[in-house]
Image 1 (cartoon, rainbow, N blue to C red):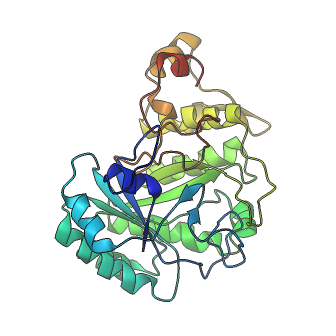
Image 2: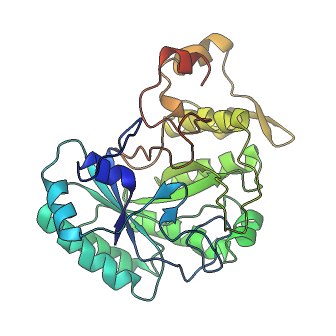
Amino acid sequence: MRASIGTLAALKLKKVKVEALPTTAYFMLGEKCLHDCAFCSQARSSSADLELLSRVTWPKIEEESVFKALGQTNSVRRACFQVVHTKESFKEILEKTKKLKEKATIPLCVSYNVRDEKEARQIFAAGADHLSLPLDGAVKRVYEKVKGKNYEELYQKLIDLAANFPGKIGTHLIAGLGETEEEMLKVMADLLKHNITIALFAFTPIPGTSLEDKTPPDIKSYRRLQAAFYLLKNNLKDIREFTFKNGKVVNFGLKREEMAELFKDGEAFRTSGCPDCNRPYYNERPGGVMYNYPRPLTSEEIRDP
């Protein structure tokens, strides 16, 4: 079992200079996935360092002491299991969930593509309060190209689980894999209609993966997605009120002064997903372009996020 380097810093188990500490403790279960997602450092064909997941380093841990520290801190408000799919994954999820819950009472999210409702129910019974099934590729042609699996099957599973476990199901979407802004936002609108939590990521090229030479998304395009997503999830606008041209958002159905007022606090550009999940530098290099801010924005950042 591994923990993100930021998690160990937040729990005061490792001295690391960081610009922002995580408010969720992130743990990785398993390594070297059975699946072969083209963007992932843990993919079956990836030659990336096994300590990596996205841009984050994940050292191996002694779970007893780390879970104990988690139960004694006030700075971390949630835990998250990022599950690398192996033959032992489901069994390990149940075991680690029970162990964590013996030491810490904080909420727990599990990121794992369960086979069915029965597995989901067992994970919740073990102590998790939220389950994310990563879609990653927003539309069929992108999903099947980068993940090589059946898009409709997972999408329908998300919808069915969300109906059976209201407010407890989420997914991940990665911008910059080849979808248009219009396609991404229409999928977001549908998922939100089913009360599915969405964590929006920016594609991050990782050396050793199939997409190591692909560029991250244009920051202006990503900001438009974040702004539109914010309007949708807060029921401030309907997807039908947006105007698209050649796949891009060209109008949010708002006047300039209305836009300035709605986005003046910068909340739209912060990390999205489960409550208290800020994923510091998951998509970014310190000092580089900030796709998802892990903290409140400065006044200068709000003016030009």
